[in-house]
Image 1 (cartoon, rainbow, N blue to C red):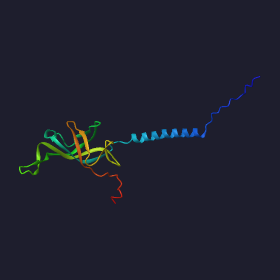
Image 2 (cartoon, one colour; image 1 turned 180 degrees about the vertical axis):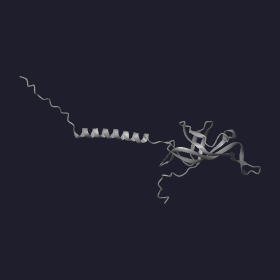
Image 3 (cartoon, one colour; image 1 turned 135 degrees about the vertical axis):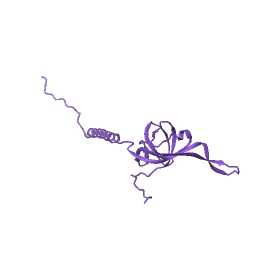
Image 4 (spheres, rainbow, N blue to C red; image 1 turned 90 degrees about the vertical axis):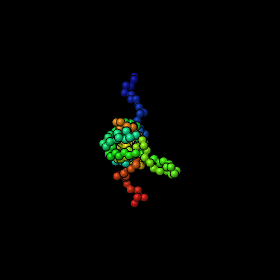
Length: 172
C-alpha cells in the first residue's frame, strides 16, 4: 500500500545572503530613483551672471550687427544661453612700425573690436559658472557663440565671484 500523505521536502529556504542581496537590489533601485528625481528637477539655466566680453578682429559690417538685447546661442548645442546687455564697438588697435623703426599702436583700418557685457544663463558650481549647466567659464575663457546673423568667438574679460562660494582660508 502506498502512503499518500508523503511530504516532499524542499531545500529552498531564505537565508541571510539572499536577504542581503534583496536589500542591496532594492537600495540600488531607490538610489537611482532619488538621483533621477533630484537631477531632473535641476534647471541648468536657473541662474544668470553678467560678464564682460570682447570679440576681436571682425569687420565693421559685422560689428554693427551686435545690438543690446540680442539673443546669443551656444554653438556646440544650439541652445539660447543669454543676451547682449551692453555693446560698444571700436576699431581694433594693432602694433605697427613707424618711419623711425619704433613700435606704435594704431587703429586697424578694416577690423573692429566689440566689447561690452552679456547676461549668460547657467548654474554656479564649485568650479565656476557653468553656461547651460555644462561649460565652465573663467576669466580668459573663449566661447563659440552665434546670434541670428553672426558666428563669433567671445573672450571673457570679466566675471563676478561666485555669490554662494565659501571663502577659503587664504581669503580670511
